[in-house]
Length: 264
Length: 93
Image (cartoon, rainbow over all chains, first blue to last red; front, side, top):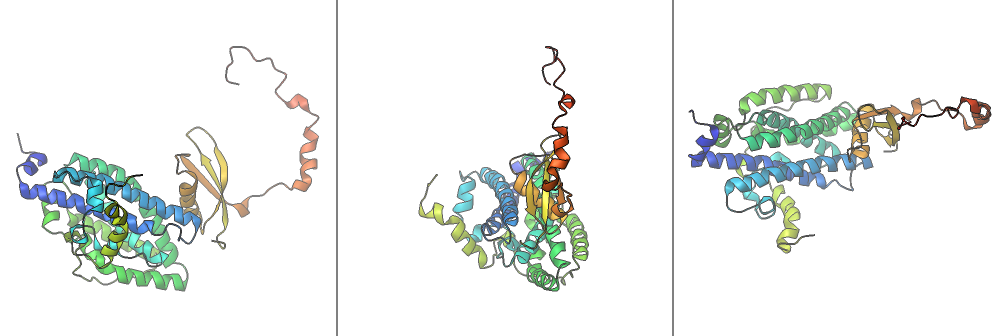
């Protein structure tokens, strides 16, 4: 009998740690982006957009709950989704630095959303075939949500990019600002390589090509220019964050930290 | 947004039923109107299909013409299907 991925992980502490780290990266990215989108509630340009952004936020926080619960089980130290979300400090978060960037104006939020939606689309589509049954099931649910998120954000990108000179200028500037944070999306490190070898996650280099083609097609439709490649030392997934994450967490974590064990 | 046109929204609650008018909303274009309708009118699983159309594209009858249009039907009760005996075996009519 050949070794299954589960057996490979079971006897291999490094593989187990890589899987835990990988699940945390996905969960934290969804959690942080969901929190960012929640900041729009009551401030969106229209009632319908308020509902729309809140819906995206709810989907993302739902994904975060599933992923962080799983991470807590993999870790085996008795931490549940709440302990992981509310009682870790910024350097322990493994989200993409792109997700923690401030909302800016509506167009800035759309550019950030579209970049992450198109990334999540590749990741979740690939993860549906994961050797890790739990991740495959989470991805099967999340990919449907993500397809809608991507429809929403790419539609707005076209509308704003191919809109007025003012809207085009502003989203192009947001794209230039945020592009530096896209480097880590598909730049594999030892965790990505290990989960890929174990069949837990698809290879990032394959997905990078598909993502790039999607991005180019959307930018063309939106009459926007792809910024030059710009490697940048932010590696949120390795815990190297911008100053913005700490401020976001102080708001996210304030209540459970001030009133431990509080419930409705 | 006040400069977005108004759309009428029709939802089909499940397969086999007809689309029903559920309300209206503002959107910049038809694609956005579908997304808004999805978020506003189907968030509690109210539907499996959405139609939207520009409210301005609806041609409506004039209330002033109501007498001319609808009064002539009033004394033609023989058009109502109320003169048939319904067999007891028919439960759902």
